[in-house]
Amino acid sequence: DIQMTQSPSSLSASVGHRVAISCRASQTISNYLNWYQQKPGKAPKLLIYTASSLQSGVPSRFSGSGSGTDFTLTITNLQPEDFATYYCQQSYSSPFTFGQGTKLDIK
Amino acid sequence: EVQLVESGGGLVQPGGSPRLSCVASGFSFSTYWMSWVRQAPGKGLEWVANIKQDGSEEYYVDSVKGRFTISRDNAKNSLFLQMSSLRAEDTAVYYCARVGAYYDMDVWGPGTTVTVSS
Image (cartoon, rainbow over all chains, first blue to last red; front, side, top):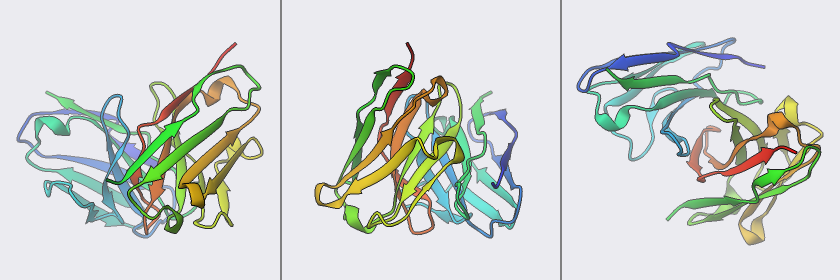
């Protein structure tokens, strides 16, 4: 099975600032990497698919990069509604594993 | 509006066999792979199972193989998860999700909670 490791597990940032969340796969997954946002008590929401493609309706302050084993989700100009937990997920091969999550909260 | 709505959760005794359902609306259900994903209390997301458009292929995480069965009824725009031999560690919110072209999950239901306890 492909293991997905996110870092950091948590981080604090201020409104208007920029943050980056890393995701590393235990083996190459090409660009089959997706990013989700989840708020407490809510279902996850797809933000980025195939490493860098922005899902329809998602603000352009979210961006993704990477290929192979190393990927990054970047959020610029943080907004109050962006404070949530973020998960990466590989869709290269079954089982379609998720990272452990990164909790982003307000500093 | 594209929508998924799960049902069938609740309090179940260890060893129980509930069946979860997910009704889809607002899109052509029969043309999409579908998934179940779960989240234990206070934990991260875990992909559980996928099923192909016509039901001819199914994939499962190892921890549920032989105990859970994913199925679908395209005539009723419905996805199912038959669960059996439930254990405490199966306690979770179970989400139904639509699978996109790159096996991303682009539409999610609100989830249904299964609690395994005596």
